[in-house]
Every structure is written in C-alpha cells, then in structure tokens.
Image (cartoon, rainbow, N blue to C red; front, side, top):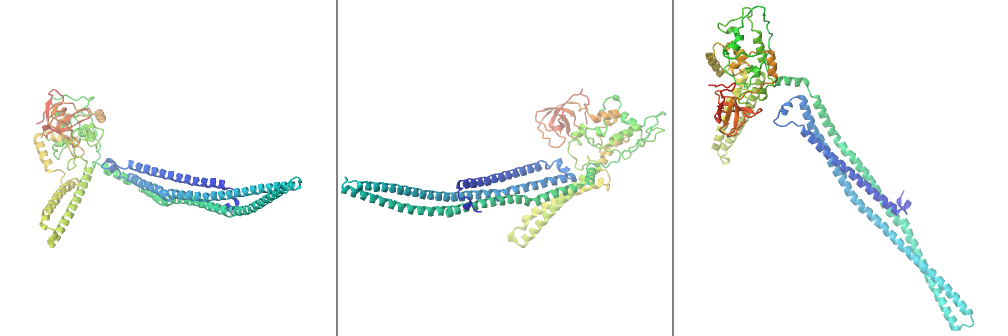
Length: 611
C-alpha cells in the first residue's frame, strides 16, 4: 500500500505523523543517554565500594588477608572492579553505537523531511495558482457572454424601432458583434486554461503528490527500521559483556570455593602459638600435719622482705609476677637448678618433697601467655624503650622463630641482590677492559669494593640471625655469653635467694622480671589475681622533672618533650640512662635522663634511688 494513492488528501496529517516519529526517536535517544549515565554512576559506585573495603597499605588489615576467607573477599573486590569496568563498557558502547549515531540520523531525517514537505507545499501552491487562473477565465467568459447577450438584445430593439436612425441601428449592431467576439475569445481562453488546469491537476494528484508521499513513506519506514536496529544494538551491547560479567562472577564463586577453614585455623595457630607447655598437675598438700614453709615459699616474702609491712590479703599487691609487670627488662638469669630443694641448707618439709601449692599456683600464673587487658601490655612496653629487641627475645619461642626466619629470608634476598649487582659491575668492567673507548675500568673499582663490603656486612648480619634462629630451634645452647656473665654476677650478689626466686621470675618467653624486691613481696591469692587482671592502678608520681632539651620520642615506649616543659617522674633512672615520666593520665614513656632535670619527692611512696 502506498501513501501516495491511499493518503493523497492527507498532507497535513502526514506532516504531523512524521513529526511524531521524529519525536519518538528523540525520546528513545534520551532514554539510552540516561541509561548510559546510570551505568557510569553504577560503575563509579561499585569502584568506590571496592576501594572502600580494600586493605590499607602498611596496616594490620594487610596481615588479615593471609587468611583464605579474606583472600576470597579481596578477590571479590578485585572482580567487582572488573564488573564495574564492564558497566563502563556498556555505557561507552551505547553512547557511540546508539546515542551518537541516532542523534546524527535525527538531524539528517529532519532535513530530509523538511525537503519533502517543501516540495509538497510547492506543488500545492502551483495547483492553487492554476485553479485561480481557471476561476478568473471562467468568470471573464461568463461576464463576456452576458454582455454579448445584452448587446444583441439592444441591437434587436434598436432595429425594430422605426424612430431610430439607421446610424444608431448600425452602431448597435457593431457593438453586438464586438461583444460576441469578446465572448468567443473568453470562451477560447477559458477552454485553454481549463485544459491546462485539468492536466496540472492530474499531474498533481497522480504524479507529484504520490511521488512526494512515497518518499515520505520510505523515510518513515527507514526511521522505523533504524529505531528497531538501535534496540537490537541496545540488547547486543548488554549481551557482549555478559560472558565477561559471567567470568567475573565465576571468579567470585571460585574464590569462595577456595576458602579453606582448616588452613585458616592453622594460620591462627601459627600466628598466636607461644610454644610453651601447659602447666602440670598441682600436687595435693596435706595440711592435717604441722608443716614448715619451705625456703622456696618463704623466700618470696622473707628473704629480702625484713622491715617491710605484711601484705593484706584484701588489698592490691604492688609487687607482681610476670603477667603484671610494667616493664620487661631482663635481669641476670638464674642458675640451671632453680628448685627449692637445690638451696643449700634450706629447710624442707618432711612430708612434702614436691613444690607447695602456692609456689605451683604462682608458676601457673607466670606461664600464661600475653594478656592484653593489662595497662602495661596495652601500652606496648614490652621493653623499656618500647622498641622490639633485635633478636625478638620479647616474643614467645614459636613467634620468635617465625620472626627470625623471616629476617633471615629478607637478608638472603638482599645478599642475592647485591651479588647480582656485583656480577653486573664485573661484567661491565670486563667490557671496559676489552673496549677502553667505552669507559675507564678503574672507575668501577670503588663501586665494586663498596658492593663487596655490603655483601660482607649482610652476610655477617645473616649469620647473627641464623645463630639466634638455631638457638631457638635447639641447635645451639639456649643462652648467650652475655646472659651467662650476668648470671654469674647475679649469683655473686645474691647467693642465698637466687635459686628460690628463679622460677617465679621467669616469664613465658624466657625473660625475667626486673625488680627482685617486687618478687620477694608477692604472695598472691586468687581474689587478688582477679582484681589485678581486671584493672591496675597507675604508678604514683615520685617527683617532677623539667626538660632541659627538646626530645622527639619516635620509638615505641618513648615520649616526646619540649624544652622547659614540666612533667611528673614515675620511675627514676636505674642506671641505663632512661627516666620514666608522665604528662597526664594517658601519656607516659621514657626520655633520656640527660635531657631532664629531676626533682624527687623523698616522701613519695615508691621513691627509690638506684645506683
């Protein structure tokens, strides 16, 4: 069916319909454009979401991602980035393949439509002009015919009247003939114009308008086809990324299936295993028979406790075992034999060859792993300076072994890197020797010497850590020469009590508590242990100090001070060059003694002088 034959008289309606078609196309373009904006916004939100939950560099979160569940989550975040990228691809393809193309097509369509309807209006105007000419000639012919009739009637009247002269009759006859001639001319002109109009009208309704309407129909059909193709493209753009999105989802499923709960449980063991053995059974103490406290029990309270008031059971003890200490400075280790029976001439219970209940209870408490609720442990003062010792001696054996092994691996990598650099310099030197024009071989000697020295230093460092690692793994003696010297010095100063207190001073990681006086004062009940476990009173101030210089406390356990600042002293220098101070309730740490001027309050509780 053709619009030219069926809709020959619907020019105005076709004009409205084609304009509506263009409006529909523009509406679809707007729809696709908004869809692309949604895709971009969605992709941006997905990327921000993935970035928000990415682990921060050099933070504890990075350590957490060694677990398989966290690795799977990290893989999910990475896949979400790829997933977001596919939505960006959808937006880009829809913009380039649909929005841009249709916008250009709409402009072309508007121009084409305008041209067709311009031709149609032009044809309409031409046929209207022809119609007006026909009407004009028709009216002229009609008028001339009427005037010719009137002239003929006038002539006949004049000719019949005997009173009219012959001249008047001749004049009336000539006028009648002239009018008849004008009517004939008008008739001929009207006939010619009528034939011409009929021809033009036939051409208009059977040729011009059908051709124009046919072109408009084809244009409209192309528009319909184009919008259909755009809708297919719209679907294909989505379909193209479905395999990649499916692959992203498959990777997420694969990551989820890679979660190994047993492996994660093993990682927890490796992370927190201390390497200590659990405490043994507590021996039964028979109190039905009179017994005398052994030296191992009494030495805790009497060996150096003369002159000190007896502790009350209900109060909080200031001297505490290892879990309650505020510092972790190892004094000289005890001799190998530390049981109560090893003390010369020490009184022993006649019925109890085993350790008494109180001693075993103390030993049980000292063998506990790290308890993070203590104030000293919360502040991280495992050492006086707050920094981790080079040999990681502050850690339990298993954790120390892992840290040492990690350090050895890092040093070996650095050694290999330096060796590769040395080989490269050596090769370059050989090239210079063979081709002197390329460079001076002697210029590389300094660099080669420097690299060799670095390798030697790293090897010595690696040997040191390997020795510590071997010590932890049991391949070397467990104590260093320095520790043995300290042990000998300690034995000479305290020959009578060292054996009794040795086991109680040992912490789970092999280090020792600092103050022997604290250990000698401890006689802990279960109720006291529970109280100290929940909360610990802050150390009292024993004086004040004034900062002589500015100190930047960058190591853990130290505190920064400004010249002229006044602070509280809570622990005096014990000969190691550091004084413990407090700024307020939550800020305390160590500063070099030479940086402050100390004013001790001699009446303050706990004020002591260390030499």
